[in-house]
Image (tube, rainbow, N blue to C red):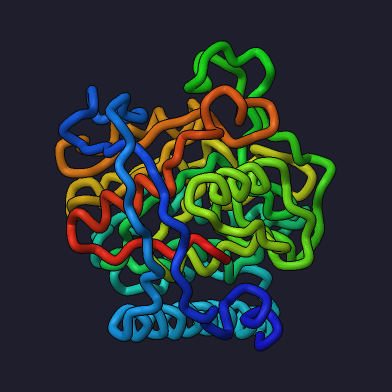
Length: 345
């Protein structure tokens, strides 16, 4: 248990530092058409983005978030360990979402017939090939980022093998927003226990950076001056309030999309709708066709929706690079008096 925690959680806080000033066009929900925002053509405005962890109160909140994340992970790990000690290879799905704020935000969702069907399906699956991520990390995104702390959302398509939680867009995509086009997963040759982490786009330390994540880091470097890290563990973003949500939260080993259309999409849609209905001012970063289809679940009058091409190697040059979503997200948060996100890992 202890080793699992150390691999998936931040055990220290990086020293506070100030990011470089960034220039970008202002974007607001009011300027969106049907809630879908693109970069404004207005003259750029210079905004200094500071590290939210540098402020004492923000640092305290950050510490509390890390502690909550560790506690939730420990609870899930203990449940799985207890089940194994009792000779069972499966923990009921509704026992693995332990973050109370999400249980309150999703009243009755885990008791709906579709969720029971999904749980039964996963129980059957647990008797066959390996399932990723490990059970204690299935709801890692929600258990790490409490509902009341969500201030930005990045949506991935599926929880894929090796924890590479991203979609690749084929070269048949025809425009800068990635539509129309064929969405596919390009990581079926990667697999291994302990490698999936349950956070969209994130990979554990020690794993090679997939092209999508590397492109995200390149855009961050150009946008807000972040140095490109040597690892792809995005846990630091998650504990700051960036919900790294995959549409499908599990997958069968060596079989990408094997758990699609089994009920996960209905559940994660409910998660998105709960944020849209119960919160205000959340920044949704929707990259690629699949993520942008989720805009229909989001109230564009209450929230900010930023869209761009997917960051995969096949589509990043068609609108992801130079989208400046990271600085825009921080500007939008600061306009509401919300501490910006420290994107530097």
